[in-house]
Length: 289
Image (cartoon, rainbow, N blue to C red):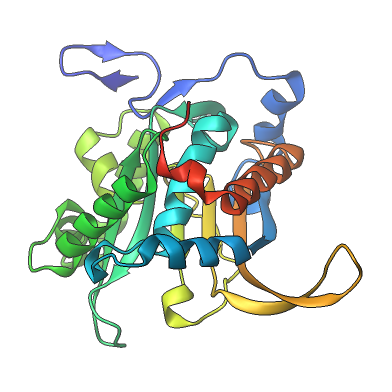
């Protein structure tokens, strides 16, 4: 149940109950009760050779602030993928382990206010329809980065600051209350929107740090069924169709997935579709049709 502003309604504010599940998928959440025991790691070696060449062409002559980056392309492609493959946007919630599908596509990620050890981290979240072009996504990312790196504090930061000042026992009690309300589908909208793990996926982009993609854990709380770790673009030796060893630019991406929400075949096929978008990035310059 959730409060619409006028009355209590069935289901969840952030998701639609999936009622046409196969029998096995209805049983799985009762065999594996938590995300921790349902975690699957899937590393993908994305070939971005064509994409890097494409970026050089489309960025030629553009002002620095309007140039497209790999992260802009990745977010655009991932949002398209979630539109095309809606099972990726599912999550398990409630005391009965029910399967829901998000009502929108939301990606959360962490932003460093400066590239130093001491610089604070702030949380950012973007909402997609799945039809955005890569230039529209660039504008969305630039806006949220400017806001996150500015002096203004958003709801998430203010919430964390407030909770951090509470005594330990009080904070533990608040957390238990929040997770109990979430289990009953009664968590207030203001908390859902302020806590970044209530999203379709959580992303970390380590490419700007020249670091590799880690095998990250899932968050037990919230609704993020997928965690996406993005590494650094590097040239790697690859055997081509003629049997010759050539250098191709690739980036490692690691997906951490709650397998109760979708199966491995669906995930593998989705990764193949994502690769196809990187092979033909022109499709991301116009809405899908």
